[in-house]
Each structure stands twice: as structure tokens, then as C-alpha cells.
Amino acid sequence: MEIIEDNKSSSSSKGSGMEVDYPFPVKPQSSKMGKAVSLYSNFYKFNWKTGGRDTLFEYQVKTEPNLTCHSNEEKIKLLKIVKKVKDKLEAQFENHVYWEGFIYSFEKIDESEMLANAEIEEDGVPYLVSIELHNDLSFDNPKVSRFFRAFMNQIIKKSKLKLVRGGKHFDPRDPAELDGVNMYRAYFNTTKTIDGAVYLNLNPSVKFFQQENVMSYISQFKNEKEVKEELTGRSVMTLYNNRVYKIDEVDFSKSPRSKFFCDMHNKNKEMTFGDYIFENYKIRVTSQDQPMLKHHNIRTNQDIYLISEFWVLTGITEQQKGYNFKAIKNDMFANAETKSSQSKMFFETLKSKASNYKEMTQKWKIDIDEEPTKVKAYQCNFGTITGNAKKTYRLSEMQRDFSREFNGPFKGTKINSWAILYGKFSSREHETFMSSLKQTVTTDFEYKCNKPLEVMVKGDDRRLDTWTNTIRYLLISNLALDLTSYLFILSF
Image (cartoon, rainbow, N blue to C red):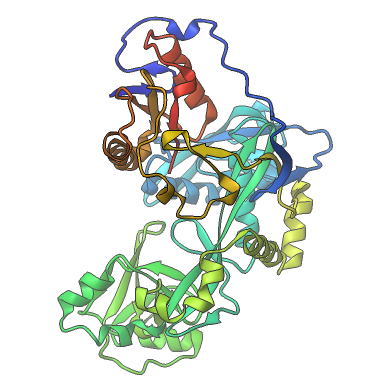
């Protein structure tokens, strides 16, 4: 198997083969055997009216001792330090956002005025904090999407959406109450730069939460071991403020009557977990003999204890899918029309707190086009397929089980040299595909061809140039491959 990383081959140690001026084939023109169509994508364009300011300045936050964002622990420490110098940053920048070690702003600060060697203590360790200009970013630079990611996070944070693990947000209002489970609107979003424009890539979804509380759910298990095995690692949502946590441990040594020192909400006193919930949320514990759910907050390095009767598990069981199939099928298996409707709900939710949304968009002079971006495409006419004995069948007239029409192997020209390319994250799917391909070629249709060259592309397989550079390398490496015989397996 050949392994190629972007434009370099691991099988060759030296050489300047990639410097050869080998023109890449021109994209074929549209034929007349069909019609041009417009497709609606799930990309929504960011629009900016920055008054001619077309450069975004990226400043790096530096500390001594040095902290990076390579681990969650250091990322959290750095965020806390940045919050402690917030006043100093606001004095320097009219507008700025922070994102994982970098500050972004349309304002260029003179080097002599930049924050330098500010003394901050975090977790008992003294740090010297400075910022340095790291990059001048134009809007066609892929790195600018980091700023738009931070911009979107601030808008979402000010809306009614709640964060779930994995970067998905859900709307806790007005769930669909089904048999044993509630269904909420949910959304996954990211930002991308394409051809000098920046887009919000939005994928509407749904999120399920059980109706039965965790205390009731625990009662069906025989012993503590079964409970821990079932619940550890699961996510739960509170019934009183819709916050979502991951269960790191089920602690049977603690209960709602257990005491802790509370330094929140100006209490500064020792109290039980049950008393804390009643004083803050006016709800009473019905059973003192229930275990506590423990969540470890990596941001604060603290353990948070949750009373199990006030929490519900996330997810939906296969049995519940069967009970509620008619009610959930349109949202779980949404077509384009449903996805479009769900996306509109996303923007409505962002604007549910209109003053916050308006403040953010006007402050940065950036808004989002709420109409999905159109993509030009080409719909080909139905053609014919040729089977054994040169018999032809019109695709427009064939039924779903048309394969029964073929009672012998396909005939065709033998392929002597060809390649199959796949991304490094698709190795498992590639193995499955190759197994099926071998069965199809050697047994089902007895098709004549040589064994293909299998090429795993390393690097970012979401980038087009990763694939085109790999093809260029193959063409100039005397591998005798016919470009027209390539078969691609992209990211699954």
C-alpha cells in the first residue's frame, strides 16, 4: 500500500518530483445531455460591512511560564488568565474576541501599547502575560474562520440555546413530548472559508431526553455495580435549568443529606445538597436514600454533585424509536424541505433575545444571510445500461430490481492500471469496500482487471488540494496510471 502525505510520498526520501510543471486536467465542460439546475446548500454566508477594514488582526496571548492550548488543562488556565486581564484588553480594543490562545480584532495596536508582562496569578502560580501581533488575515485566509467561530459562539451563548457535548446545541423550549422520551430541536454548526467568502455550515438535528428521572431509572438495577456500569459516561440534563453534564461517577457514599461548604450565591456556609437545591430552585428532595451523580468540571477542576431525581438521561432507546416512529421520522430522517424549515428555526432562536443579537451584529458590523447559498449543478438525462449479450436497458424505464434482468457477467475492456484513493480516517470503510469489490469483480461478474494500487492520503482529506497533489505525484512517479481509471473513496 502506498502512503502519501499531501504532496510527499513516504516511500521516497529525496527528490523534487513535485516541482515538475505537470498541468492538472481541466474540469470537463457540461454536456448537452441534461439541464442546469440550482441546488440549495446548508451553507449560510456571513456578510460584513466593516467600512473598508478588510484585514483582521490576530494577536497571540503569551505567558511566562508558557501555556499552550495543546491540552484541555492548559487551554482552561489560559482562558482564566485572559478573563483576568479583560479590563486591560477592553482598554486597548474597542471590539475583540478570544479563541483558544488568540485575540481577534479589526484594530491594529501599536507594539509599544500592547499588553506586556502583566502579572497574573492563576491556581497559585504567578504568570507574566503579554500579547503579540501574530498574523494579518484577509477574509480569504482559512484561519479567519476561527474568528467567525468565536463570533458565532458569542451569539449562541446570548441566545436560548444550550450546549451539549460534541459541539451540538439544543433548544430547551417546547419539546415534543412522546412516549417515554422528549424530542428537542438541535443544531450542529461550524464555519468554513470558500473562495474568499466565509460561511456558516449548519446541520439541524434533534436531541432526545428521557422522561423518567435518573433515580427512578436506577431502581431497576440489581446492585451498585450494574448502576455504575450503566450510567458512567452517560449525559444527563437537569429538570430545573436545562444544563447538561456528563456522569463521571455514581457515588453511593453520598446522598442529598451529605454536607458541603457552599461559596456560591453569597452563601459561604456549610449546607446539605438537598437544602442547596431547595434554597436556589424551590424544589424538595423526595428521597434521602439516593446516590449522587458526580461530574468533574475540567475548567474549574472541581467536582459537581447532582441529585439523581432532578436529572434525566439523554438519548432514545431502540424500543422507543419503534413506539414513536411516526412522530420522529420526519425530523430524524429529514428531507431537504424539513432541513430548510429546521434551519429557519435556528435563526429565529438566535433572535429570540433580539437586543443581544442586534448588539453583536451591529458591534461587529457582521450579519448572516438567512437564505441558504445556491450551488450550480447539472442534472443529466437518463441513459442506458448495457448488460450481457450486449443487451441494453433504458434507466428511465427500469424498476428497482433491474439487476434481475442480467443473467450473466458484464463484458468490458480490461483495466490494466488503476488506483483507489482514500483518506486516513476512512481506513475501516476502505477495508470493507475492498472486500466487497473483490467479491463483485472476481465472483459476481468475473470482470477482468489487474489489482488496483491502494493509496492512503495523509493530511487534511477535506481539502481538495490534498487529493489533487496526490494525483499529481502519482502521475509523475512512473506508476503508469491512467487518470481516467481512478476511483476515489472520499471521507465517509
